[in-house]
Image (cartoon, rainbow, N blue to C red; front, top):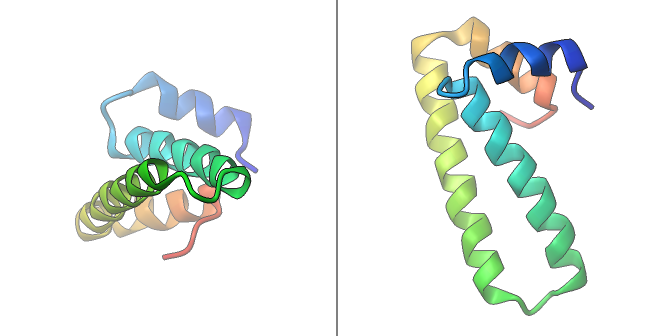
Length: 81
């Protein structure tokens, strides 16, 4: 999944875009597992869509500002562009 050394670098700067995307990705994965068990949990579905939108906006910002960091983050977190 994600390399430990890379995580330690991100955790040093908790306000960075990379940390925020990393945090949202973990929340998304956790909510996805929850929704596989509880299919009718509509409030969690709404929360998942909200977090997905926030992560998408952060990734769009990062791709505009620094394309190299964006590509590296996408590769490390194993998410689609």
